[in-house]
Image 1 (cartoon, rainbow, N blue to C red):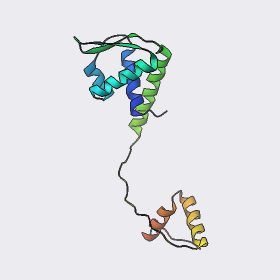
Image 2: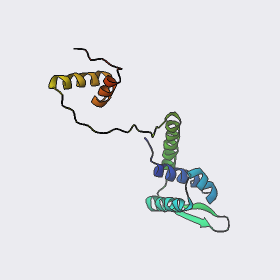
Image 3: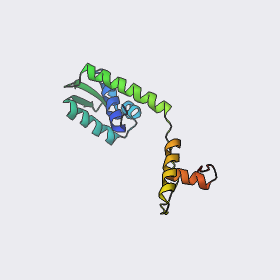
Image 4: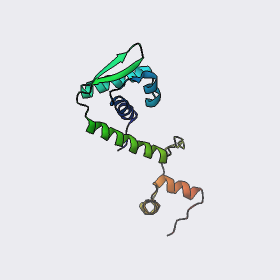
Length: 144
């Protein structure tokens, strides 16, 4: 299961507070990688979703779950497992945000040529556009 950023933040927050001990807001903000306003929204989401009572201590600037509501030990364990899996996935995954800029063009081709393009695309597991680019760049030759 791939967690969204919001799910990861809420799961992290729930796991941190599940012990019933006070956790400083600064620790939570660093661990959940969020701002104070985002922390407030995440706490509200936990209160709403699990009917949990989370108290804020102004003197120690910390949060503590005083009543877990519907947040059970089983759910906390599932959250821990999901966070662990998400961490393993993020360590092994590299995401590239650079995208080659392309411009759509229209070309007229015979059905036989389109058929050959489709066959090559299926064999190479590429798109028609990729095959045409490879042909133009002389990296691939069409066989009759």
